Image (cartoon, rainbow over the protein chains, first blue to last red):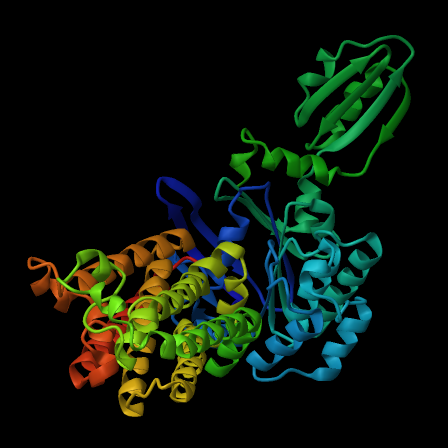
Length: 301
Length: 262
């Protein structure tokens, strides 16, 4: 099956700065692909390369199996885009913006457009300059979805939205996927992505750090175990156990994080007669922070 | 689709286009209405006696009390091109580079139109705005008949068309520079400097000997510097002005294709 998006060794430099460095990505149709990374990691540049806004310095980007730049007109007809820095002419009203973009696309399903306007409570009669960040963003969501595109490329889409609208947006994403369409969702917020994404990629300093399903990443995430003993126990006892990453001690309490097999660790814990053992679910946040940090887990790339 | 791009920009610039037209109409009506008061003034012609470079600098050469001389020195030689260039260079620099700096160009480029159509729409917008300005001016000159400003309508039409092309030339140069540099400021700066240089060459060519041979390199010479209002703009003017417009449009197209859009 043709991938919705595929990049090979995609590279973009601005002078001496390499914004995207040899990026290999593959997004299959019918899924939400979460594209994560800290600010300045190269997410927006990658999106601009996919949409032929930027020219690659090296490598290639293909969308629906076609060259992103050479076949850009045909690709753009099938894409919806919400930029991270969403800007419109300040004196146009919301209604006029939607009308003009619909005409420029050769017409859209007006019923769908009206449904989206109603659903996101979009203000149509005020000029863009009078709208709050959140209200502008809602206008951008309608612009991106109103022509029922096969691929949505969304850069920080919930920025400025209140929690109710964020939920509504997530429902819209689920409906989109249920219809077999594809979403490329860029964000620096894990929460936003993990709720809806099937697969994620993490980019840092222009390079791909990891790409996997959310479930597989969760399996890899460190588990936190909190222990309470009758008397203080030396943390060093646990530091040598395979898979244990971090140990902190406070009085007769020990907290540790582990990604390895639990059998050996449980034996060591049992040897010291614990009073309490509490194991928390895998902490995905911690895993992502590990990837985000400059000294992060490159081995897992 | 090209028409949609033009409609978008024309709509967003409708106020400034209207005020340019209102302003130039008021100015032109005052100029033609004042003609009867000056047409017998021998003092006025003394300004250009002896080929004064200072008078030439303001576009004043030859007889100023004839209808053609009066309209030329007060509008066609300086004020009208200035207003025209303010409008076209301003739009040209803003249409690609300015919108890219504002972050509004990206949403246009991801429409299924292609950059060439977007550029065609921008060029059409520029021509329509310039056309509104020159039609207003030509109409006011025609109304000047009521004030003894009797000029050959064909000569006025060709001279006015030459001013339009002058504006479009520099507007497209600004568009190309903006698309090449990505900077509205650079586009305005360089194209304005180029226009000022062309104006100086054309204005001083009749009175400064060493500049005289350089006049062919000035677009002002081909548009307003060669008695176009009294004799009409000839085919040579149109060939040069249209050729420059085509070259600048090709340059803009190449530069826009290469531009990294935000």
